Length: 115
Image 1 (cartoon, one colour):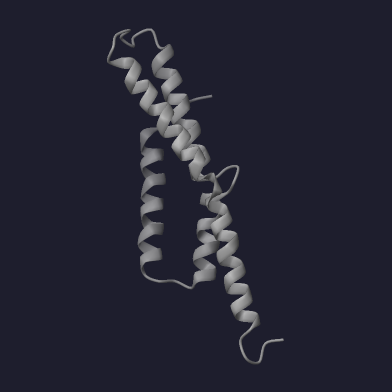
Image 2 (tube, helix red, strand yellow):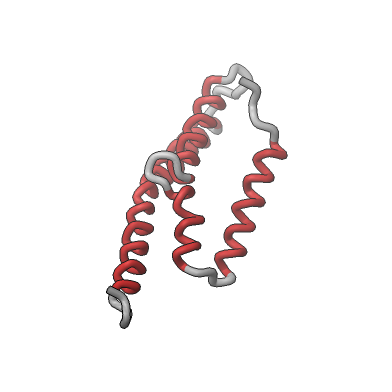
């Protein structure tokens, strides 16, 4: 499988930047939650994907024959792996979306005239 091109990754990060900008404009919360939901999916969301990417990068650097085998490389690889675990811990953010969705659903149900 051919690797992704840096331009593809830049496009992805620009899209995320566009989303952040849009969310700063205070869109409808239900719409905002729908837009963010895929990013925080428990299994495929950004925290999980970024953690996998960081672990894979650490492995690629560690296993590559051109990587210097000295005291500088090991702590850098360890930092990548630590960052990966920290990202993995963020996989629970999807629960916040569930709670926010419930908050808006219960608020809408309790408005006068709603049954």
